[in-house]
Image (cartoon, one colour):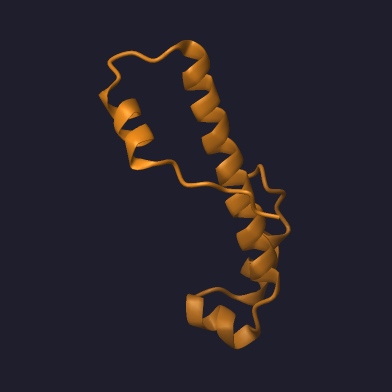
Length: 77
């Protein structure tokens, strides 16, 4: 389901060199960052539900902590 694309180095260089960006472009970038964070949270919380007790111990979480984190909706940090 992932349709992510990596921006080209040329595109990133252009954005880094721009002295000013149009307001709409700034909002579009902020929106893209927000959606990317949400997708990462959703994916990692789903994966957290699949970990065994010994795997949770390996990453320093208790089953209760893992359950609490996995139960959060993706838009909550």
